[in-house]
Image (cartoon, rainbow, N blue to C red):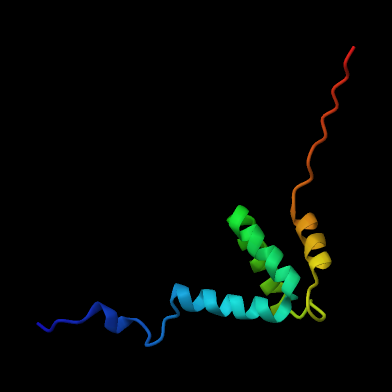
Length: 95
């Protein structure tokens, strides 16, 4: 019997998590203005799941060619508002 290494079945170059993260950051750096990148990093600290959803949305839009130029901070705010679920307003009537 011959021993086969389980790692032999894997391709030579499997992108690691760090490499994918660096690639994502490079793409975001190309499509976001500095103020928008700063806002995204602030969002990432407070709400990581929202930041991840926003990043994937932006990268998908960029890869499909739906972005014209860099995204400004104001445009990023608009995208964030469109991604958020509408909040219900509660009105309390006092008698």
